[in-house]
Image (cartoon, rainbow, N blue to C red; front, side, top):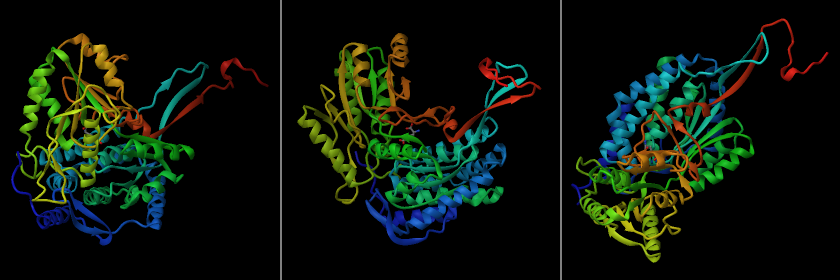
Length: 509
Ligand code: UN1
């Protein structure tokens, strides 16, 4: 199915300009690079990139702001984030428009992304009064042992096109209440939503009397990201993107003893057990695999179905795939918008031809759509591919809507298949058998940072920590105690006696 006609690039440009105007952004147009829309695949406007000197200045300014911000009481820092959350609520619709225009997300997912930002702001405001350290029983009389959490410094945030605003907000809302300042290098593919977020935060800062430079945006290419990676004034580099990118960032930051928080590729799987509620499983699987046109790091990429139900289940899934409405993401009936670029489509096609050469059979989808209406855009039918084994291409993350379907006989075999990929982000099992569910969640089960039961792999709430193991990079962002990555802990020993008692019974003098 294809939904209604696509908007023209002129219409999208006007809508983007209108949204930016409502938000209050004055765009500095230029010729360094272009804001584009995957809806037509065409350019919206030319923009100016940050020079080396401007990036340098942004880091220096964020460092100076840090010196004030770190001693501002945390609940007062929370006021800045509360105001940001209010502004996000107020401009939710315009912000979601920009996400749709630049990332191609369908309306409901674009609104969901802004909601995720509002939620993390609420979370961070609460956290601003809960940056708890511990008091530890001292072994010495008249002594108190305590742990205090202090701000870390400048946080460099490097984000990807697919969650162009929410991932920034997870990092920034938490970093700000933790007393850090932020320099943000967004994806070159999503500059307009980045300008909007930066503007709203600057406005919030002005209104609550926080330093302007608690946040700086630097638009441009990879060289800017590299400056953040290599600069010793950037205490933490929080980078979201491919495993290949993380393999470069991690060691470079470590070489200067900086900290990094990496949120890299996923190759997420779901196991469908014989006892599963199949209606629920189909819904969860189709959203996780085809939603966001397969461009979430939590997207479901592998399905491991019990052999006894595989026939009927795959048939039902194939039927659901045939009905997916693909096209204009602004149309409320569309479920699958465009891929970000024709390069992404080429990568998808490359993976499909490799998997076919390795014995994979396409069960549904895979055709390009809307080539006449939008020759420069990359619309595709999500694909289901039956595979007998996890060949190299199945073990890689292809950032496109390809779902590889495997079968299993025993739960042990399913878990072994599940874990036999380099990545470890998200996972799920559909089952009504409690023992199976608990085994999947146990230490001997899924090896991922996110493990779910009777729900797909994507669409995590912000309250939990988000991130994964192995090639996914090991970082945790968002909720739970992920905030600790944005602070440094100091251990304090306070002697309130009149004796100098040495630990471990040591005597001296
Ligand atoms: C990402 O794709 O980088 O769990 C983040 C999810 C979203 C976040 C995805 N809340 O799918």
